[in-house]
Length: 467
Image (cartoon, rainbow, N blue to C red; front, side, top):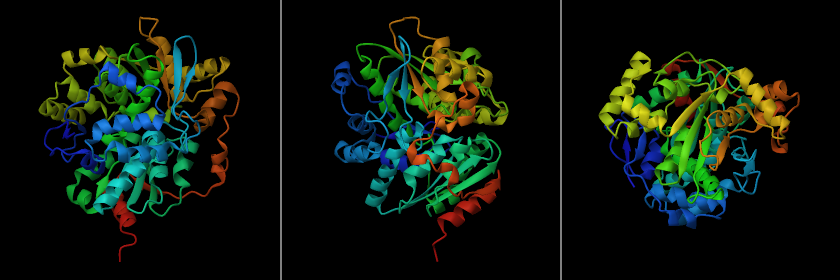
């Protein structure tokens, strides 16, 4: 299994190389050179497996034997052993055809744990075999940072620096990052939006001397391993509902496009996914694209669903590459024009191809609160992101009523207490392991959105113990 860049100018790599590199040197994202495709008989053989075992089977399709299934299985069993539900990612029925796929039973109460908890041991395995160490830099709109920190804290061969937009995460999200006082962890509160943070991370990777000096790697969903580790929960839920002998649909609240891209990847691998619904908040660039081929940047607006407060969806580049017939030159040109002009010129044929699979839906804060209230009235307490997913599923269901809709429940409602309180009048308590979160001391630094200042900080953090 080899990986190529969506922009065509970086050398191909194996899985380990992609894991450690994160972003391609040409600014593109790595994708499989060829997609593994399973037959119906092969999908059926995966039914009934415990989640870690299923995940090991799926991930092994992308590693090219390094590491192989035998090495992956104990890593993934370890990764998911501490989750708060024995099913790891349980399905909860919401009505006659809608199910919530609960992805928030990991240590930081968000779907990012599903991949991040496995990335930690994967990094350890590869770095130990190679005798190397690295520095992870990442941007977060709320959940990625805490999941990455939890996965990488106290690991001897890893330093990690996470950038978050100051004042634009929930209090719980921020404190889950800034109260981790492990010496290899550093947090930066950036004066700006998530898009600013993401641009800064990409700029660090584009600075080749700095990238090489610091041995940079990424845990954002720009790292292909993140996407590969998110595919299994779509497979697990589809198999539980009758696939491959029954079609399913997924509704995914999304900002950076990585989570829904993993569902698309499962479809590309032969899983019978009839439709993919994308839920957006007021930052609705993806919905505007799907409804009218309008991929125009606008200012990021804060909302009750901060993990989706994004206007530049990095992972869309991987889908664009596929929509353009894997034409790397066209992809690179389209992305350059997007950054220069603020609008992505997607050919009509490619756009129409996307609309055959994807549908978009946007919900403002008032609508989000109303949907949380409606779900609560029916006995289910949802966070704002999940509520947008259920609203999207209700607004644009597949025409065939026999097709079940699985909503990605991406975060625990306790991570967003203000929105839940406004909608329902109740408090969503944190699990006991986080009960003292508000009393824990914090440690973080504030910096402007200035590349030089941030690179200097990363260098000091990484080299702090070098004589």
